[in-house]
Length: 96
Image 1 (tube, rainbow, N blue to C red):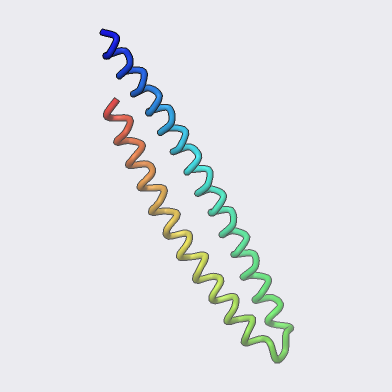
Image 2 (image 1 turned 180 degrees about the vertical axis):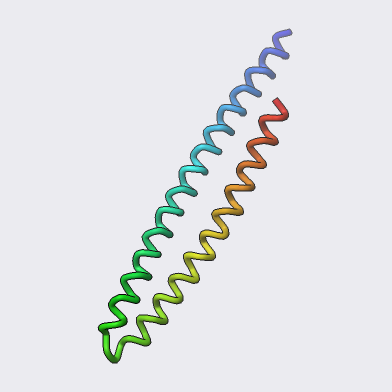
């Protein structure tokens, strides 16, 4: 009986730690998403400044395109990460 209680206590501890980790991971993903929003602001600024940059216009357009492509890739990976976290969370909850 005592062994069973220790087992149940350990399971509860692990579930709590797991849930905490999922929550922390979700927060980190949201922080990354917020950073990609900032990247999109930089892209817009680069394009605006490029229109006034004379000889540097083409370079700023290239920089804006590169940043935009990187932000798009990050957004795609965020979507995949969210789906994985949701699946793992559901899987962990269904085992309880």
